[in-house]
Amino acid sequence: MTSDVFFTGTRTTSRKNLLDRLEELVLAAGLDDLPLKGRMTAVKIHFGEPGNLATIRPNYVARLVRMIRERGGKPFLTDANTLYKGQRANAVDHLQAAMENGYNPLSAGCSVVIADGLWGFDYREIEVNLKHFACAKIASAIAEADVLISMNHFKGHEQAGFGGALKNIGMGSGSREGKMAMHCDSPPRIQSAKCIGCGECVRNCAHGAVRLTPERKAFIDQTLCVGCGQCVVVCPAGAAQISWGSAKTLGERIAEYAFAALKGKPAFHVNFLVDVSPNCDCWNHNDTPIVPDIGIAASKDPVALDQASVDLVNRAPMLPGCALQKTGEPPQDKFHALHPDADWERCLVHAETIGLGTRSYRRIDLP
Ligand code: SF4
Ligand code: SF4
Image 1: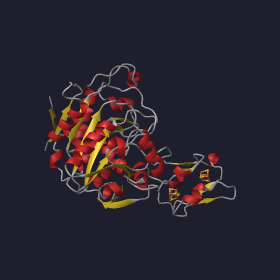
Image 2: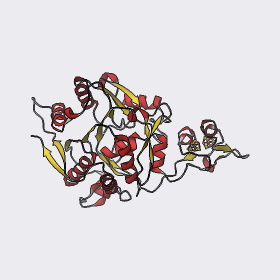
Image 3: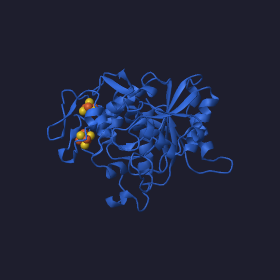
Image 4: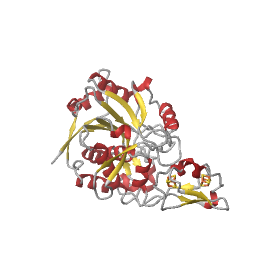
């Protein structure tokens, strides 16, 4: 089986700007095949940490949102809270971060919904019965949407190798507990030397799993902990920490969560290969892009789309002065050179194995 991936470059004229190119692209790739009329349409995007300027321009979002509306859909922009502390760990801060980065009703033309609620506890369990997970905890606004359209900034990622459609859908649709399950094999740990004994973790643990010792040091009872990650995000001292698991199986877990998020849902995916920064948009900065802007790709198959995107980046010339220069000669696999401990291919291989799509694609370049 081969999937079609449609691609458009970045050259423009006064009659066809980049927004027109996006519109032409998504129509060619089959947006009109989606049953949008009257349907809740989740536009899954990564809002990015404030300070990171490499996220997808809101102008692109506004054009796609307008197209969804014109077809009778009910679009909303969405992302789920993060596992770690930062400006996107709860819905209030997350909405503020989204607004600062330009994603708001005025600029995007639709509402912004934090998919897993105020503290990341709002999720639906979706049965998948796959290698790593029997059920996935998918943020409720994504799980309950009728249609999912992913808009993905394609860039490097420290643990996954690169972030594209599968990463945005899989990791990005997991509730905090789901993210913890993807990232970790064990509950959070307390770094005693940092603990100031404030008790915030005790007050915020809904499962009674944290207590303070007589020395006022937090202690997690692993038999009660469900791995929700709440203690990590409320700890003011950085003492409650995530026990990051092996990056080796992370890609497979992301693929299974993407499978859950897309299960039974009409979907469509767009990758933006512009400002291809070496690291994730979760950072509050974006380093020099590793390649020149390449273009935009779209497909109904997220596996084919990510495979085509990584191939496009790997065939592109390396930009001088970028993080890749530390590796000397331009590497054949840029993402592996940037993040040698990550294994991006494993995500695509597993995604193909579980039936999410195919790595075999036909690229159709629009004029
Ligand atoms: S991860 Fe959740 S359940 Fe476990 S100790 Fe922390 S707050 Fe409690
Ligand atoms: S919230 Fe952090 S600093 Fe406060 S008691 Fe818990 S682990 Fe210690």
